[in-house]
Length: 288
Image (cartoon, rainbow, N blue to C red; front, top):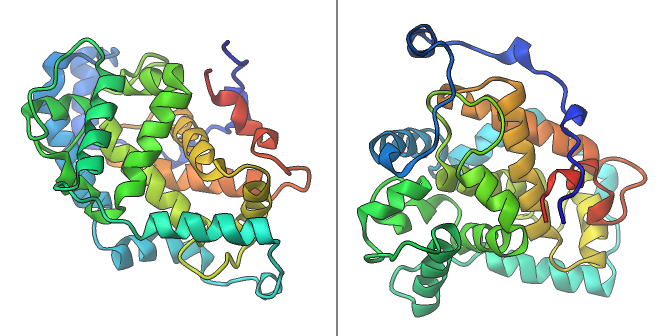
């Protein structure tokens, strides 16, 4: 079943839009036409994935600094709130997932990668765990394992959960099926890793317990649904794509799009009437 979409909940961010010379050239040459996402776009995807990885996926301290510029002042009233036993248990389990690096020699990790490929391209045989085919999904190069250094195995788990739980949404974003698209689009897989890391930083999940209102409210949601983080990831990915379209963005504005997504998600997680993941207004963006 397809849920009603509510893209109007995202304000226009055209004032943040920065047009670079390359984009002006392409708009003039192509008349701002939509470029269909096809398997023949492998070369372009490879170049964009490298751009995204260089810009976004680095050491945790670098990315942490990027996303914490606007949240240096912590609200101390959240320092001493008690956790229920179920919240404590689920938070600990989630934090254990955060500490798991991706290991390309681990059989379970290898199988997870293969499963992701078959979800994305069920009718295309994968030639190997190292293959030029991976660029078609938006990885940096022929070996996806090199892209996990900034976030670890949980980012692959997030992508798998997205593909298995909301396959229509997953494929819609993978193949850029809706909206008027930029000539140079964001690479799906690398963008997904950055969404994972954005959520981890926003929710303050590396701390013993979150010390901000969105993180505090997330723990309440986690107490109701042990899959809350993975579902929130799917929502955030849809929100990011909606912001991308609203801002008429191209790959040079990805940082701005991700920051706008974070700001919108923080607002929704700060609402008083949000007690379950389904209470988030942006939940209705997901296709079943």
